[in-house]
Picture (tube, rainbow, N blue to C red):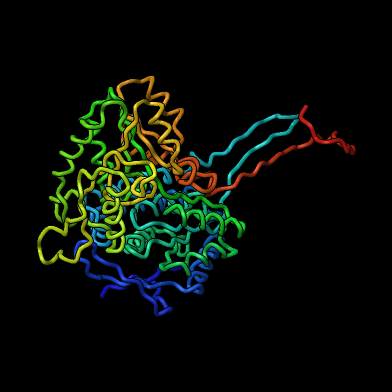
Length: 500
């Protein structure tokens, strides 16, 4: 059986704990790999390697850093297919979706390649007689990232390329459910010439996480995952004096107005709700149909959903793959099973889908597409983040009523409006309480040079991830006031300094 170990100080390091976690092929249910779980001492070794490397890397020139990053970008591009296959094998998403994940991660690597623009700083000359003031940004030191299973390559690439471009060194703790792509990212970084210790990867569970959160040499922690864990990460790391950005869960709404192109809205709803089997923090999981659009929109969604081909991710014909684990599959199914009793109309029940039919896939983590209509706002299927291929449709008589439903949600990650009315779209983007808004765009994930992040229970901390916010998160500001006095200057002045 394949074993995934740690990556510390530029080399693979075998685990010493004797504890391993299973990594399963979701399509077959077969355990294909085991991953070593780090001890606190192994986390300490990774942090120590990062701290030692920071002594050199933190003072390296921007030219040195960007030269490595340009080579890294070229290697990642050359290994897209390999990375996508690793993702599919352990996560289960279809190959095209895995390729898209790698592409979106590469956007942030490309942003990191241009870090010279992001770190230019500011200068004000002659603020007073012969006095200049400059503002610069400097790295923090050792920083850490804790990343989720649903994007095992993209989310790490949202973090460490920008962090190391800013001069930090990095310790990554990827999900133990699909760790192979993170290790491969580190290997390719070493091949690109990244010095030993600048990027380290430790695998494991809460033992590794808690040690990173409390370690005195870790200056900042980035996290993406569920809301309860994001809250815990933020509280614990902050209590230990660290800077934190913790991105949590979501219940993303799509508001469909009566003037919308319902065919386009239905296409978007199906794509955004069921892509990657709904295991996306930016998935549309609730559609709010306004006015008389509900019946026609639901019929169009159903028509499209029934045609989606579910199968193993490595089959080019598959449009949706299995869920990550059997336990998660059963949890998702329970929401559908209990929906009718809580007042929803079950239009499609995908819980009976048991796989493509081949014996090879009989034990896979399969589930079909479910569509729930007229869902009450107090139903579990609406109140909870299901993180699976279940789409809830709610009804609203007016725009104002629909907006109130969206804004009453405790989450505020992403949202979308479908309409032909520019005035209503403008109202929505200003009035909706969410960090990312799409206008006729169902999954408004920003490009790499803008920042990604939500509001309310979808974000703990002040900084969004990547983009300008990412640069600010991984650096700290310093203001330098300089005066080169004239030889004739002199004398003592006890007054408060002022500019004049």
